[in-house]
Length: 375
Image (cartoon, rainbow, N blue to C red; front, side, top):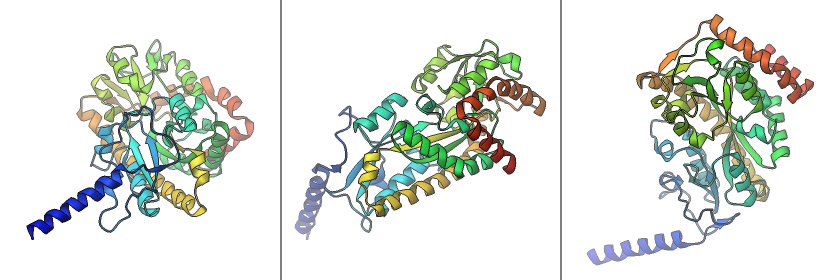
């Protein structure tokens, strides 16, 4: 009996080694750099099993160049920014019965910054990545509606706009402008301002402040209108830049402020909700066009479910991470309506004409009409 068990065990090991040694079916070349390593928990730990699909030599591997940290991917509290991505990884493998597998490379292993992200997909270095709607503005003005300060008064209205004809038009334009398939828009809620040396309360407090923003011209101009000195430090270098006082402050959603531990180098936070942040999830159009209509339908359904699931996570995380920043020692200031309006007035006056010129009158009017009707 012991001999039989040992033989059976060795056979299982041999089968496993054979599977993992196979050259996986893929639509692109080996990752660059070759030493890049997928996140340790990936879908291989979450799907399959005795009753689920299994990876075979015909499985098409889609490499996901993720800027989220390994720590985010390993979080188990259900509030991580990577949570809906985990869902996507699992569900794509399950619902395609193992025909497609998403392999995650976190920590910016395969690409850091929008230039590398877009070039990486175009060159076939990987097939999926995620780009901030603010950063993508250097390549297309498709998402300008999302970058107008104080235009979207609530998460509900912002999400309704993303789901409307306006949102679809943004996606269509982005695909035409940058040549990538937009999977869906993943929201990260509203952005807040943090600083190190002094507390920000009024427009005057921004004067001379070295502030890091995204590279979107509208966002930069809005804070320049307040008198801030704007820099576009790469996000991967932001913590160090804050720590070394290269910049005095930055602006990001609560999840990012906490998960990137900005509270360690930023003493103050001002609740502004000035811009609704989204992540543009994109993939290789060659991969998409090579899929059967049935698999395209499966991917489309999973993308929509990811979007809705992510919104649930964001709603919970807004409360959790804001409190976590407070608990970590950050002093959060809630401005009065009058104080916030004073900041809003300056930013609006600084960029609304620019927004209208960038978007064109038709898009500008459609955005304002939508917000007016839904407010």
